[in-house]
Amino acid sequence: MTPVEIRAAVLDILEGIAQDDDLSQLDDGTAFREQLELDSMDFLDIVMELRKRYRVQIPEEDYPRLGSMASTVEYLTPLMKDISA
Image (cartoon, rainbow, N blue to C red; front, side, top):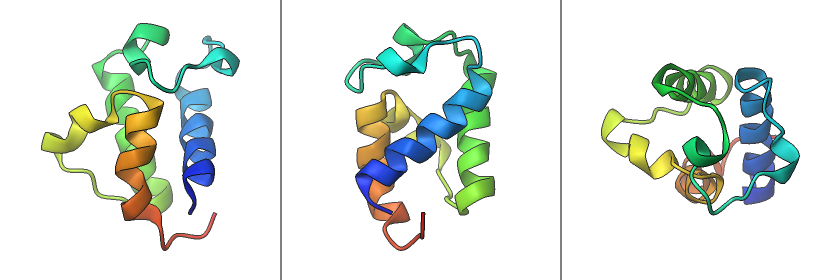
């Protein structure tokens, strides 16, 4: 997957988790928690959904690297490069 495809995949996951939030104005450089009403369980849901859909294993110590869209895409790009969109 390309970074653009990964961003779209993460947005799709966020749409299912943050259903009441407007994702059209999401700033990629700002932390998700500053823009969306996500709690720690919602964040875990994102990680679990990535695992379920794409078989991406994210160690707990790497969770802080998924703080914003930009950092999430940067982190996931090497992990998902061989996955078809």
